[in-house]
Structures are given as C-alpha cells and as structure tokens.
Length: 137
Image (cartoon, rainbow, N blue to C red; front, side, top):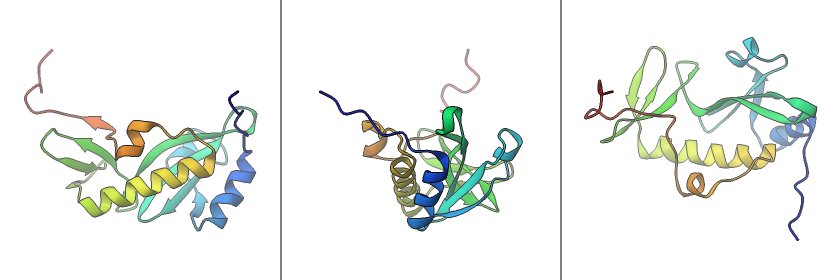
C-alpha cells in the first residue's frame, strides 16, 4: 500500500528552509500575485513561493539564476541553453546549471513537492526556441 505524503504547512516550510540555510526574504515579483509571498535564495539561484489553498505551498516563480536582481528563466535554443531576464540574455555555463539543479532539488524536497524522474536527471528548460522553426505556423 502506498504511503500518503505528509502535507507541510507554509510556516513549517519557512522554518525548514531557514534551517537548511536558504535565504528567505519578501518576494519582489510574486508579491503582486499573492499576499505574504517570499523569495527563497541559495547557490545564486532563487524562486518565489507563497501559501496556497489550505496552507499548502505554491510556487509562484520557477527556480532560476539571479541576474542583476532578477530571476532568469532557462531558455533552450537547440544548440545551447541561455539564462534570460527582461533585460539580459547570457549563455548558461555548466557550473550555473549544476547550481540551479541542486537548488531546485533541495527546494522541492523542502516544500514537500514531487520529485519527477526527468527533472532529477538534469535541469529542464522553461522555454524552447529553436531557430529552424522560428516564424513557422
């Protein structure tokens, strides 16, 4: 028989994140969408979370590398991955991808989320933009 996962409250998650040396601060982007949203940082990466329905944790902003104070999204252009913000786009290095993957795994465990097989193998991109199909219907 499968075990039922224990649902952690938002306050329990915040204290757990503090114990695991995550930096927890009021959210910048997610504060517009949810009250009491917080930004969680570690390894130069960040994500924004808030209390969801019935006190569960909701991820407002997917984990990404922090560039110039903004959480960058991972963009896959087929030949290379990039970190993209509203003002900047830089190539993704192996070291930054490792930090992002480690941050994402630790955050998922801390909030009691589901660890998916394909995400456990490596970092998955937020956006895919291949040059050969750009502009095609």
